[in-house]
Length: 265
Ligand code: THG
Image 1 (tube, rainbow, N blue to C red):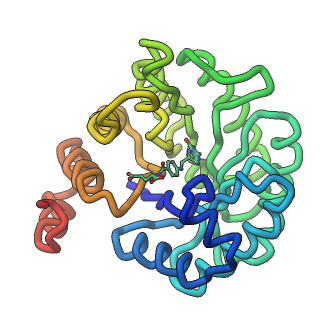
Image 2 (cartoon, rainbow, N blue to C red):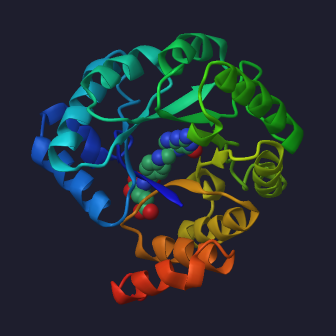
């Protein structure tokens, strides 16, 4: 499972304050903590600062790279902000994300084409949020075909079917889970990724819902997740579910995690 650490997100008050105060030490600490807890990528998101996103994302990339050797996942709907942050990034980052929204698609595709960057392909279009498996597959088809035609290897693409809140529509959980299964079947070699926390929006005991949903998604083939790597229970759930799915030869990763003290509270 590719773990994308979600904590450097300006929607969190501590991060917004650190960005505005230019507090490099605070950002470095969160980057370091997430890397030590097992993050493969460090997500950086300054989305609440409309207009200043290019400047703040650039600063976040620089600051994270002072503290950790993990690449960033550059998280923005704004191609200009992504472009600015890319300039500052050393090594090969992940783009989070391209979508089928025309403005976003047209501006990001030439930036990604022919590079070795990983890219999250978010199932969203100008027609709005997808609800059914079919809605998602239709968008995923266009995105995957567009990217591969532009020399992006399937192995670099993570399709995000877009998690929607259970509290809004009783079918959203199942449609998402089945979309993972359908995408993995349709595009051999593709990856999938998602942010989970939306599924529990509006419900109590959100961690219970998020962890259970993670297990269900891993069962269908999910192999990338935007999560809080400091959440020990979530990380242990991921390891156990992957082992149970047979994605862990001789249970080696499970045993390694146990010996490192990561599986028990
Ligand atoms: N798909 C893609 N990118 C995304 C999302 C997605 N980026 C943004 C978001 N969704 C995922 N990122 C976050 C970041 C922070 C939180 C939730 C999602 C969050 N964190 C808790 C907090 O604020 O304290 C801490 C989490 C915890 O304690 O477990 O709320 O869907 N492609």
